[in-house]
Image (cartoon, rainbow, N blue to C red; front, side):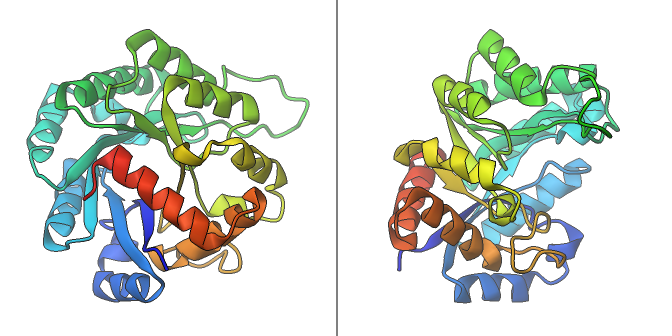
Length: 273
């Protein structure tokens, strides 16, 4: 079968890093041949560790950036450190960056500023951008929205600044069909995580049906967002196949057909040989 590619996971997270050899062995046994490991969360050390992991393994590549949670720390020093790390040939993207209106250790204004900086850095370095969008959850369906949807605000900022020429990826997409159309019109690829396997994710699977063949990607976001039937456990790249199977069924293609398409898309976006 075509090798699978996990286009977004966090191998430097302690939940995976401390068990990395076994995690990668299980991934290989499950048919995962390539991984894009994302730093971004926490300090610059997470990015450094992610690049080191990528440099030690042929099939692993890295993305570096400042997660929206840490956007308040996205200053000139941090951006300079990211620029240096991106000199590695194994760094294939900038991010993840974007907006997270559910958990906000960094205020919206800092998140928006950080997104601007990442767009500029990706353009400068000729790398694609990895976007994160997450909205606040209302306590009631009748609660008025507190701010524009994160996806809509991200789209507004990207339209203002311009998508980097190398393109980008809307990771762990959970938006509606209108948001998907907007991201696609900007030139983004759209990536789906284990959320697409959840029983209540029928609308998301319907959105996945609309994504053109040459723009769809899949990911685990491990150690987070574990797919069914392993929900509740730590996630890892070996579980990617469950998301592949769910999306292949939704798109009425075979898992092999979808795996081949996703690998071609990821290779083109991230310039993976």
